[in-house]
Image 1 (cartoon, rainbow, N blue to C red):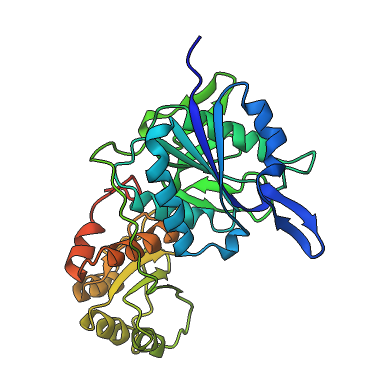
Image 2: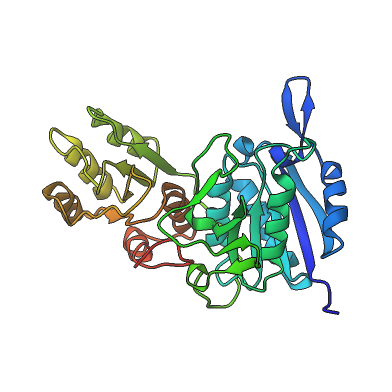
Length: 331
C-alpha cells in the first residue's frame, strides 16, 4: 500500500468553520472540522494547526504573512498544505501568498465553503476533499480549490456571493478538475516550475485600487499621492480606456512623476487590458503606465504590494510586471 500522504491543514476561520452565534455566523476553531477530518483521515495523514479564527473580511496583509510563514516553515514535514479560509478575500490571500513563496516546492491549496460545515448541506466537505486531493498530488504551486475545480490562486476571482460555484479561473485553464476519473490534472493549467523555495513576505500596504467611473474627478490622483500611496491599480474601461479628456491624464502624469507606479487593468473579468489598441491607451503608455494585461485586479494589486514591499523602484516594478512569476499573467 502507498504510504499515506502527510497533509497539514492550516485553519484561518471563515464560513467553513462557522457556527450560528448571537449575531449571525461566527468563525470557530477547528472542532467543527474534526468530524469531517475523521473521514479524510482514512485517506490522508492529517495534522491541524489553527493559525487564526477570522471572518475573511478581517484578514489583512499581516495575516497573509502569517499564512506564508507557516507554509514555508512547515513545508518540509508534509507532502502538501491545505489552508481553510473565508471566501470573501480568499482570492487576495491566495494571490499574495503566491508572490511571498516563489519557487514553493509543495502544493498549497486554499479552500472554504459557502455553507458552514455544521450545515447538513454544506459544500465544505466536497471542497475539503478536492483540496486534500490536490495537496496530495505532488504538483507544487499555490492553488484555490472550490466546487470540484482547482485553479491557480493568482487567477482566482470570487464571482458569486452565495452560489456554490463561487470562484472562477480568469483567463487561465483550471489546474485540475474532479471527474469520474478522480482528480484530473490539467498540465497546461499548472504554474511554471522553477527556482529555490524562498519566503519573501515583505509587503507594502500603500497600494490603492481605483475603479474608473464616467465623470471621475481627476483631483483624486493627487489626493492619493498626497496620502502616501506608492502604487495604484486603475480598473479602466474595456481594453484599458481611461477618460483622458480634461485633467485625468495630468493627474496620472503627476503620480508617475512623483515615483508612483500606476498599473492599468480592465473592469471586464475576461480578456486583457491592451493599451496598444486605442489612442487613449497609447497616451498612457507614453507616460509610463504599466499594463496589467490579463491579470485579475486581485493579482495585480497584491503583486504591486509585494513588489513595493521588496523595495523595488518604479523601473524594477515595470520590469516585474512584464514577467510571469507564477502564471498570474499571460506573456
